[in-house]
Structures are given as C-alpha cells and as structure tokens.
Amino acid sequence: MISDKLDRLSYRERVFLALALVFVICVAADRLAVQFIVDQFKSQEEQTEKQRSALKRNLRIAAGERLVADDYARIRSRLGQPASRAAAMDDLKGKIDEMARESGIVIVSMKDRDPRSTDAYEEYAIEIGRFESGTKELLAFLHRVRTFPGMMRVSKLAVAPDKDTGQLTGAMLISRIMEKPSSEPQNPAKPKP
Image (cartoon, rainbow, N blue to C red; front, side, top):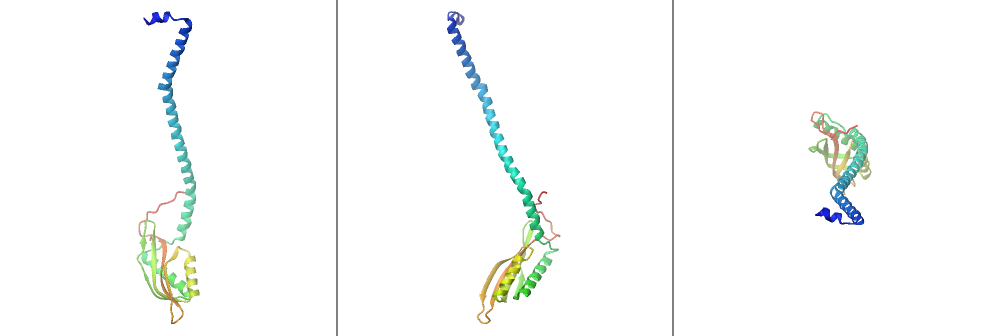
C-alpha cells in the first residue's frame, strides 16, 4: 500500500520526500544524540572552569604560604620559651622591675596573675597595683615596654595626679606572650617550608 503510493509519486516529489526524510532523521539525531553530546561538553567546560578557578585560588594561597611561614618564624623567634611558668613569671617581674628602675618609676605593689593559655602560647600578666612617677618617667617606662623585644605590652593603664606630691600615681597591667613551657605538650600548626 505504501509502496503503491510511492510508485505513483513523480521524481521531483520523491526527491523532496527523501530530503524531508533526511531532514527528520537529522532533527531526530540532533535531539537525541548531538544535543546530549553538546550538553555533556558544556558540563565538562563548566567543571573545567570551576577547577581552573579553584587551581588559581590554591596557587595564590600556596604562593602566600611561604610569606606566612616566614612571618611565623620571625614572630616565633621574638617569643621566649620559658623553662616553666614560675620561671616565666619571675623573668617578667625582673624585667619590669629593671625597666621601672631605669625609667625612674617607683613600684609600690606588684603581683602576678594566672597565665592565659592557648594551643601554641601563653600570655603571662603582671598587675602593678600601685606605682608613682613623673610624667616623663612614665612615658619613658611605657616606651621601654613597647620597644622591649618579646611581645610585651601594657594591657591596662590607670593614672591620676597626686595633689600632695605633684607626681602621678596609678595602676597597670603588663602582659607578655611566650611559647608554652617545654615541659608541657605543644600542638602548634607547623608551617611547611
């Protein structure tokens, strides 16, 4: 029945029918096979672009890692490593007392606080309950503390003028960051070379 109808078609109609059939086959192939391959290709391109941007970010991080490692080594060299907590507190008290004598500050009362501990370091603190000095002497002392090698700082400072003597009286809290004593286990992040 179909072959009879095809036999009755003219040559020109058969050519157009063949072209239409080829067109339908091409459209079907495009929808079924080619579009699938194109979608897979686009998906691969998107994944490649994501991986490329992740690689760029990781390379920037890796390049900065050396700088971070150098900074870590420089800062770590500024930190002291005491033999024990008691030795660290005694050393800190001695250095504060020495700087106070050199600056002309009279320390009336001084006591130590419990160290604050983290994974890699401890912060030792000395509380000067009362001191007496002149303005220049106090500024010289503060300058010595600030420029002291070893991460020392004045955390709190309260100053008031004494009406009787004309001197300054006050209190301060001085802290210093040091590595944990060697007798305690440490777990700091070690930089890669």
